[in-house]
Structure formats: structure tokens, C-alpha cells
Image (cartoon, rainbow, N blue to C red; front, side, top):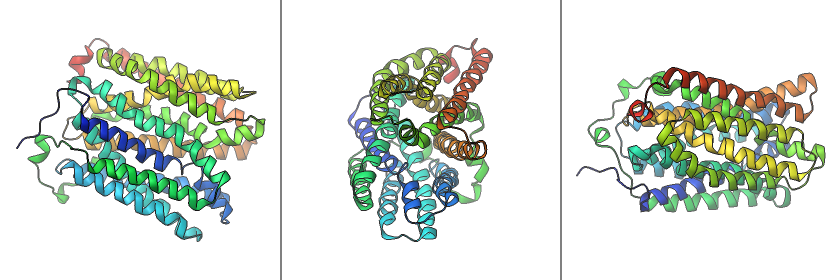
Length: 401
């Protein structure tokens, strides 16, 4: 029996998938700012602290081409559940060892599981969204990603600073269990062309499944977008301590709030006009938000920065995903999704690494790192404008078909 793509955007399966993905990102993102200081607490060197992020990113990038290849011929539900269960298992293992080498090995395996899970979840969302509403639909799905990335780090920091590390892990696993339960009750749709194919490992090409050529350009621009975000994730807590600014969580709160408010508006605009104007306008908001952080004197600045960044970065994330997906076929949407999430991991991972090296070598203040990384949003603006000039004569609806 052929599975039909739904005509309406909002249906039970899409709602369950959004909620499950949100709990998945909450479970994961609360570990992002806390595992590096935990590594330091158990005796890790600065290099080993850096490897916490680097090894994870390598694992995620390595697994995505493989799962992207599998998604071309396999049903969605089993793959989604395997990813969710794998994340639960590896998260629970963090609390059983203080041996640095073993901990770093777990981090690499966690990256493998994360690459698998995010790629399958994103592809499943594409299958559930009507083609004509891809921008709006992926915008709502992207909220589960963005809000998770915004709220969870603050929650993780609170638990890490006020409770035992094991409490942090229990909280993360609990959120992951909720996600797994919701995934179990979700009815997934596998496209007809995927059902017609059989899995063939001989046809697998790592680089062929790592990069979806028609989508490479928006993935590159997405990389620079998340490079800027990486500076905030890595340094905003340290910056608050340096400047004696309390209530860092207010940045995350207003970021999430205004990302939620803006997302439906920018999603519909995307469907009518394409990605270019949305991304160009929002990159200016993100640039302004980054500079507001850089000159912050108190928490009021953080609130303003959160509003600007929520509208800007919060709207660009799903716009990039929808842009990347629109350039490929439904059959290869898994590969394109994998490339999108890899651009995020690369952007955040390299941002933390490069800005850390720059800070150590030049002795720069943390505020200067925000100013430097803000240039990435100007680059997003320019690269998007170049593509707009090249394609503006083609109606978006025609170009995306």
C-alpha cells in the first residue's frame, strides 16, 4: 500500500515528530556547555577539553553519509528508533567513568549516534510536510531544533553548577526517554521511490553521500551562519563571568521566545519568495545581536541581543534546511539533510576551536571574539545576495520544483 504525503501540514504524526525532536535536542544540548568543564574537573588538559567537541563533530560527520545512503532505500521508523535508543545508551554511559580516554571514546560514539539521529529525524520531517509548504513546515520543525539549542544549554549549566554530574545525566536521559516514547507513537511516511529501491552497500560512496552537489551552496552559507552561533555557545557564560553580568539565561529565554514568534512569519515568506530575502534580512538581525552582546554592560543588553538573535539566527536555521532540501530530490533528501546538519556541527566545532586559538595566541578579550565572529553573518549576507542576483529572474515556486 502506497503511503501518501499528507495534504495538510498539521497532523498527528507531524506534531508528535516535532515534540520528539525537541526533547531529543533538549537532551543533547544540555550537555554541550557542561561536558567540557566536566572534562577539566576530572583532570583533562586544555587540549583534551577541546577534543570533547572535536571528536563529537568528527563522529557526527562520519556517520551522516552512511545513514544518508541507507535512507534512500529503507523505511523511516526503525531508523529513527535506532538513533534515539543509541543516544540514550551513550548518554547514560558518561556517568560510569572518569577515565579521560574512555570518556573521549564515548564522545566520539555519541557523535556517530547524533549524526544518525538528526539525519533520520530531519528526513522523516521532510516526508511528512506537503511539498508546497516546505518552508513553513520545516520552519515549525526547525523550532524544535532552535528552541532546544537555546533553552537546554542554560538548563544544563544550572544543573551542572548546582547539583551532582549524575543528576545532569539523569535529566538528559529522562528527556531522551520522552523523545523515544513520542517517536514510538509517530506514524512515519516513506516515499514511494524509496520503497522501490533495495539497499546496496556496493553502491555506497562516502563522499557521494557526504555532499549533495545541487545543495552544496546553501550548505556552505549555513556553515558560516552556525560559525557565528558557535561563539555564543562556547563563550557567553565565560563572558558573563568576566563582565559580572548576571542572568545569562535571559539571553536564551528571549532568543527562544522571539524565534518562536518569528518562525511562522518567515516560513510563509520563504514559501512565497524563496530563501534569499529572509536570510539577508535575518543575517542583519543576527549581526546586530552579536554586537549587542559584545558591548553588553548588564542583562538588559542580553535581553536585546536575545530578541535580535532570536529573530535573526532563529529564522535562518530552518530557512537553510528548507533551501538545501529544495535543491534535491525527495529520494536524496536524507543525504541533503545530513549535509545540512554537518554544516551545523562543522560551524560550531570550528568556531570554538579557531576562536579559542585566536584568544590564546593574541590574548584577546572575550568581547573581541564576538566582534570577530560577527563577520560570519556579513559573509552570510553577501553569499546569499550573490545567489539571489544569479537566480532572481527565476520564480521561486518554479525554481524549487
